[in-house]
Length: 148
Image (spheres, rainbow, N blue to C red):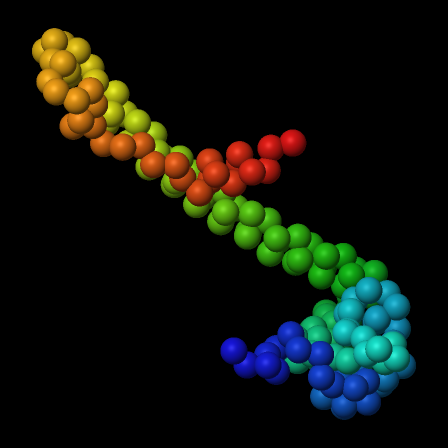
């Protein structure tokens, strides 16, 4: 894994300002407003990541090219973050639904075999010996662990 990925805060404010084309005071203002939240050193100095630099450029573009004020930009960025979070939650929900659907199909297959055995009056050896075992899905295990 790359120790200096896009989220690694490595750039001091003067370098971040130069890379983003903004004045250091503008970066401080954006930080105070919560538009960009750089990492901090032990001495509280700001350290910007490449992702922060890209965000600074986008803020500048929205402001200068689109004419959006900083409050509007903040709202846009919050909506984008919410959208990403919701998309991740939706992907997890789809995965859980797929697991539950598979579990339901397995349960239906077992129920069908039981019904078939009952109709035939089979007791045939070990009870349930030809049944498909029901597996516990990660969703069920997660749900059991996180019950309140």
